[in-house]
Image (tube, rainbow, N blue to C red; front, top):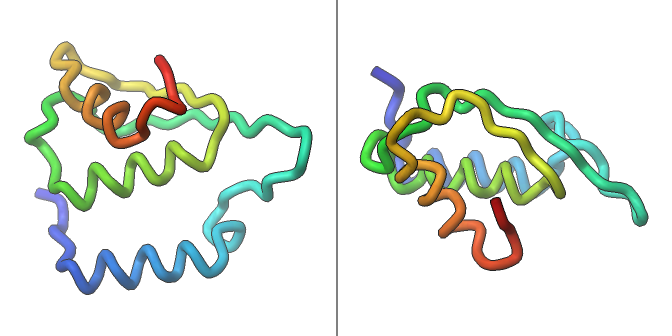
Length: 93
């Protein structure tokens, strides 16, 4: 089973990511460019399979890109729908 982070650990993760996203592998956003990402989110299925903080983190990662491909979406689409709900109306599928 995956490690469950505490709220303070999530806060530390997000703070470090906010401070320097490029350090953690995010491409630098340059005016006029489009950022494209491809992810294999392991067994992305039921929205009940992960913690709320994990879903918010996955959506946060997706927001870094203009176009993304997500692999390993399972038959239960509630997980991808949850990410889309968190991303809001600026994003489509």
